[in-house]
Amino acid sequence: MLGGTIKISKNKNFDSTTAKLSTKDLKANFGKVQVLKGINLSFPENQVTAIMGPSGCGKTTLIRCLNRIHELTPNAKVEGEVTLDGVNIYSPQVDPVAIRRRIGMVFQKANPFPTMSIFENTIAGLKLAGVRNKETLDQVAERSLRMAFLWDEVKDDLKKSGVDLSGGQQQRLCIARALAVEPEVILMDEPCSALDPIATAKIEESIVALKKEFTIIIVTHNMQQAARVSDFTAFMYLGQLIEFGTTSEVFEKPKSELTEKYITGKFG
Image (cartoon, rainbow, N blue to C red):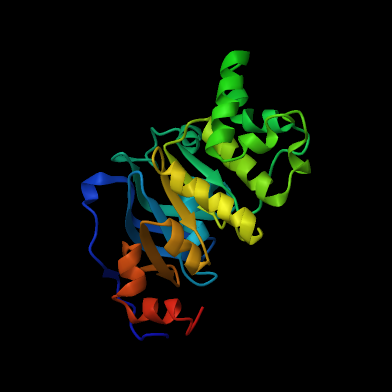
């Protein structure tokens, strides 16, 4: 095994009392295969936390557990706790649909609804929640598209189909759709993996701006991207959390030999 026995390292951490979202001994399985092996991690409020690590290390499964999407997969199982503002979201009394409104998700592949216009895509979640007031919908659509740095590009063509946009625009439309329901946390799973550098820069610009109002957790294979946009970084390997700290500390002074080898390109 790379680096010998795996040891979890922590750099200087933020005050855990400022955490918006935390996991405690979080385990996840697909059938008999254990993907997460007891993750203990806290995500600071109004900051960007990047989760990085080689393919298959459990990054995507982790964030899918954070808003209870993992359990929708057949034979999936979750153990442990995920707390949002101190409340365990896996408690029997908690409505998972309400949790998915509070913790929004932007997937790796842009997925605008193909039969809907740009406007309809943006406010789809609101309409699903029963909002029908046209003035409210108009205001939320504009605000969300502005926050996703897309408004100026589409404001004169809101009736255009969402799938007619470029790949980068489609991804920003999906970000706007997530923002429209006013989540508190936004999860992003490799949001720029299929985009060119110009589109990626737009997404990164929006991420940095959005942390003023939201707590953001982004999965990325791109270490340069993690360094550019995140305040904190978690490194995972084989379903375990290896290291967590401020991004500058993790990249400049990693505590774990595994982290250092990954950052310097010796494996991954």
